Image 1 (spheres, each protein chain N blue to C red):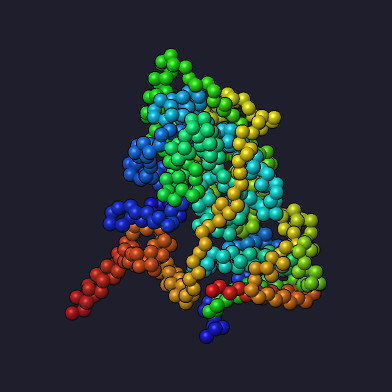
Image 2 (cartoon, each protein chain N blue to C red):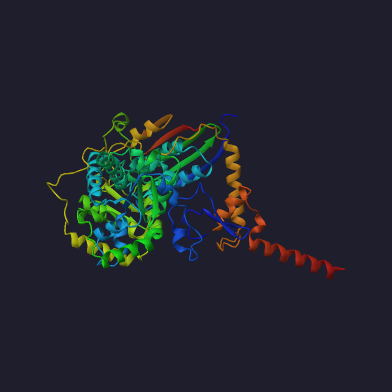
Length: 411
Length: 143
């Protein structure tokens, strides 16, 4: 309950509940729950059967989850052994995305600091809590979306398939991407489904093991960019763009802190702020298997292994025909035009302040709300009662007892 | 009653206090969020507050920001003791600024402050007396 950075979890009648309209899908609760009682809903095997041809689109984070002797091509080949018809690497797509982002930053210096749009949780936080900063989000699509678009076209041409018959599945460490993609309303995504790394890990590991034992050759044609692998690392996108005047922030509480600083107008001189809700970026995502330090070490090794440390110049950009920029990508939905009854709102607020003043403010959480402030909110909104506060209740009981004793001795 | 004051609060702004600059705007913004004013309005109010607050921090010695809510309007009055503005018409032009190089280094002084306030306010009034101070009145309708 307390780990939730936005106070969206309550304990009611002995069970944890979460408030959907407050959740920013950061996955912090998924990370800490040792019983794995919290998990986002994912795709089921029947989703696969809808398609004639399936493609796995693994996040770069997947490459970092295995022993360093297991290279991306082995992982990609193994994906084709566990039910996908094909697997695609997205490290080239990240380069095109980074180029587009850099171009946007140079064209929009008046609105600095501009904010990276690649962490869906950070985007959600901004839309919910820092709405006036939404215009700072760089309106560039994510590499996965780009890759999905390109692959769908390529396969439908090559295999003479209808685009609808191709199912593209993102293998992801990210709870937020998972929810974004599995939403009913598909207007924001070209990906058909998302599968957490944790869910696929065991079968994939077995497949990798078998592939390495057998004499079946691995598919060698994967053209992976070491430079592109940087994308999911903290500081990776800034490094790829070569923007000196940038900061990289990771970890949800650090992100909230920096957004507060931007709100106060303290970041005027920074061109680009890279935000990652998870520590160390996507490598620390809630749906990863390997711990974040090993994963980082693995990733750095891979970057060295592929040896492309600078932006590849002269290489043909296979994605150049795509439109990477999308206006209004992150603008929050229009609000309804309801007239505000300011008197009601103000009286609610003063009541809330009164309640908060009477609370012990030790944030014990025994009432089922994460802290006294949120508890005061909940009382005002009628979701809980003032005497659900254990300390206030104790004081009241004590007073009642004293009054009773006094009454008896008086007789 | 239309002009009935429903809520009011006064904030103090201290000149050259760059460490706390922006704090008043943030607390007003939090307040407006709490009473569920529409985001679009909050956005406009916070831009006005921020620009006005920064003007006091950068140029004046001391100032106050009066924040009032009536049945229809949010009224912000910022009054300071400071150098005043010599040529208000010039100060209202985009790009005109008397900021020092040091201020510009901090990222301020683009000459957009006052024009920006005017753009975002429904009613805007500025009075200034050289060597005495400046008074801004900003009104924004919220319904």
